[in-house]
Length: 560
Image 1 (tube, rainbow, N blue to C red):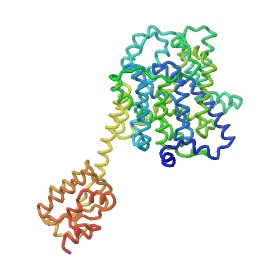
Image 2 (image 1 turned 135 degrees about the vertical axis):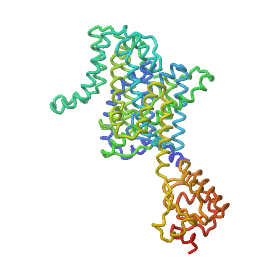
Image 3 (image 1 turned 90 degrees about the horizontal axis):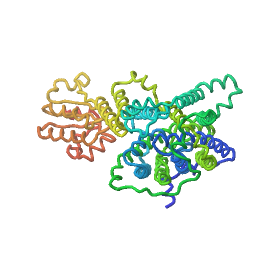
Image 4 (image 1 turned 180 degrees about the vertical axis):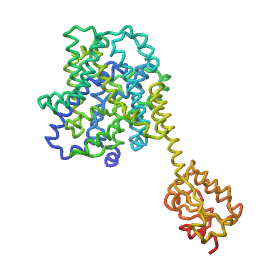
């Protein structure tokens, strides 16, 4: 029983600890502490932007972060709250309330675990890159727009969830802007840009400044903005002034008071959370694989194990005050760059956040919301792949249309609708492309001299590509112009036949039999042969009319 269990549920931690040394442990501890420091402001900012209290982000980073690392399928992936969830979580809160957000998150956890259990992790890779880029950039725009309120220090009681509602509310409240908050936010954003773009170059030119580049820019901004706000007495809104003090202990298990009448409508939001979480997590894991491939501990993640770990984390965390969690790219990259080499680093990151929360929770209340909005603005900018818009002219129209439609629908309508439309557009484009690559070639007498003088009585056709529902017209065209004596079909270059293609071949066989035209099939092999056996085509033809190649088929048709 244990062997069968481990065959489908085997955390990467089990394998990573084989041959684990003290040196690797020290590297993991150092990386985990660094990632914990980086995650601190991001966790609070993501929660606040989602409409939750800041501690929800901390609880998620601690509980879900620990579970994802301990049970996941990647050596170095760091789990926790992510910017991609902001728009969805805010929308669920606005429409259904906190209790139903907890249920929706737990439902998404069950879905994620089921996806991993059913070995569906590899299917996530089939989502086209145009769809991924479109909704990623769309989410980044929505995050930036949602942060304008705190960036400008506007006085707004509640923000709507839709894009045009947000713009209308912001424009109606622009006169309430706070110059001190705006100045602080601009200064924080400038420091973040300098820390990421200019400081590495400065460190190369001046080695004495290299130690500063190891400090995360978000922590510099968080501490600097808090100190500046206190010392200068700035009139800016802080975490404590809006949300009260942050608790210095983890919450107990809490079952929400929710209505089944409302909960039954949560299937689509929960599915959206599960789909987005799986995509974000597995994309992050692939990036981690590429980075780890350059080091001594490189290996590929187990997508299905990762999904099951994400499912467990999302099932448990919301009942302890958390929010949806997934793999996070920024923290994972930080982990790898700082020497993280096993899931121990992710577990240390969660413990680090727990210690910081237990010790320094009261101090977090003085953090200005303008500083957190600047951090989120910067995160959203880095999250988007804006260069893809510049490169659009290099791609064909279907790719451009798919990417732009998903982007605009994500921003203007809804992420769920955007992904549905994007996948449908991608599927239609794929069907059209494959059908255009499939073709039927009429065999001419120039290639086979034995056909000379017999063209009216014997026809030969070669089929190429895939005979599926989008290409059955190729067989139907042959059926519409049958010769008097025999049809020779060369299927040697046919790589795939679906049920619609098999039905078209059977219809051709019936038409030939009805008109007393001999049908000879050549070169059936592999999947087309298997489909011909299962659909009954082989039973509809005499064994003598199934030949290995076109030459034998023509000889048989001509009676030679």
